[in-house]
Image (cartoon, rainbow over all chains, first blue to last red; front, side, top):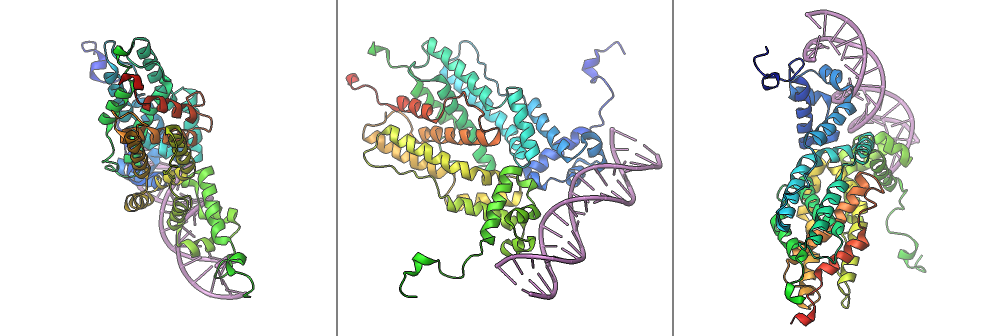
Length: 213
Length: 213
DNA sequence: GTCTATAGGTTGATAGAC
DNA sequence: GTCTATCAACCTATAGAC
């Protein structure tokens, strides 16, 4: 028993039967496919291969289940990373940021929309977002700070508000993900893609050519 | 009876009792306050001051009611205006566009989110948006075209993709409205406002100073 | 912790008078 | 077109055995 590091074999505590987790997975699946109004405990139980009773045992009630799904996604997925390596240029910064944000939103947007379908959930999510300083605000401010540093090191032109730039960049990611999720996967295919957007922003942010001085 | 122009007195056909419209108003109210999952025909009837039977008479079923609400907002409110007066400058263009888009989204976003709560509604809305060439796509393309004209007249720098700029501008509006509606009315108050965003974009888009040539 | 069985309450929808 | 009355279905939630 002491021969092997415990953590390499199994997590502490009693082994999970998997039912509890399976319910969350099934619930998220139902949310994506049918929407929050159509999510019934019956359907979730069926898909998860458990009884309805188990759902209420673990999550108290329907709202508790939905809350757990939301919390799960938000904490499990983590927040979009905003840091960047030291030697990176502007393009690397924007590329990393946008990719991270879109990847985050691709998973998180479902639960945000889900929360909008019920006043209790909406209130609960809003409280959590402002209380823990999560939400769009945080990513925007972080990118803004990076851009401000870029202005100091001469990487970014200095006559614009870095936070405003950050809003534009974040928003474009948000809109792209929302559009695809809310309308259709290939809606807006003839609009400039992420790559093109980053390129454009890099051009806009480049400092005036040195021969000006 | 012929003394007065008919249109000045009353619309053709039988006078409306107002019940039908009252239901739509009440339904929208419930959607805003409680969310789609909590919208019941009973509650809508109560608020509208009509019987439940009337709702089904007019809108067939619950989904029919929600569909009517969506259609109503989308057609009644119209699409954001994208045109601009001839002699306007870049700031006037962006100012008018962003104000119009935000005003539109302030009313339209509720129904878009509502549609996400039910697979049938989502599908129906998506079909309508792509079929009638509505949706974000349209506004973005329209602004992009205006910006392209601006490039030709020397109002806008020529080394960037106008459509990409349009995406940034539209997205910022979308994100601002979504944030306030989904989280809280004053969330993100310390982020740059619409005015500041427009100013920043104007600076970014200004053509290189003439003494360069 | 998970199941089965069931109770209790709501809801969407219909029928028929006015 | 609107109402009242009512139904049938569904869904959440609980109780108790294993």
